[in-house]
Length: 378
Image 1 (cartoon, one colour):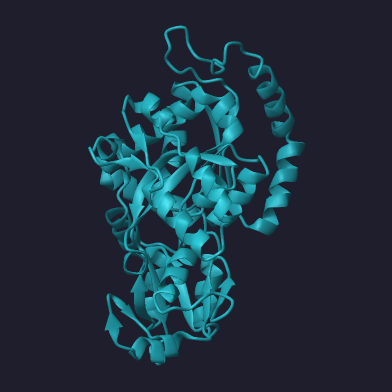
Image 2 (cartoon, helix red, strand yellow):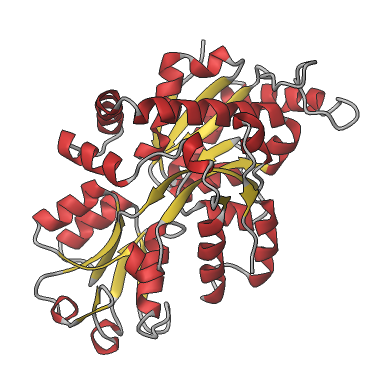
């Protein structure tokens, strides 16, 4: 029987999860199987069927997800038995944000991560390949208090604020996520640099919202309609959105650890096949999508309503095969853009941008019979 691990993890709790996983014997069994799989000859992927079609290895494939709509295809496919039908044994672990999921990937406790902007760190760090994208996200925003001089400042290019009102502020948000990028990009528009001109205080999303409403910090950078609704109900004022700060929406990424990509290529392709076929099913049955997703997020501590769920799904439609059949679609465009931005401001080492060559559409193309190309740096 497939094991589903429904745990809301932070970086602190991750070590506990690792210990539990090892005690259950999953870690050692997986390692042994991988060593055996590595003994195949002529560079063939372990488990490939004689007819060239991918074949599931039966090994546990541990997938990191979040309480976000772009992750729900994994949960729904597990519930419906879709992974089992193609020979995959998928286990998923729920993380609160992308930072803690990255820790799980780096510690080899996850094989695949369905993540947001945080995918850039595992790709640039050489830990993971970017193997797919799940959605185009445009729900990030920055908020100030209504009595703030920032909120009262004139709007320019969709943003309120000025160098004078923003210098010296403290911004609440989560590092290694979309909220950090949009905050840094927003402040960069006014010539301000983190550390020297303002402070970015790292908090998980829910803690940051609670702290900001309670009076901590000058600005908050958020992502997620539930958090936005909570702030607006408290009277907070939007001063910028993600697209205004960065110039474009962000595509949430799917990554595979590089050793998993190499040793279990068929499992990776089959995962993507099921993921996108499930995404298409959900997008064609919005009522089922909304009902199931609401139950999932409520189980994982998010204060969503039917209205919030409907708004999020509408604002963040899932990618399907049709999305990627578009003539101008390339895998990894926004990953490259975000990584280059973080390199410019010193968060990512310039030399690590070479690892953007790990944007690999081969698994996607095999899974869905596509001809997607990888985006490349200019």
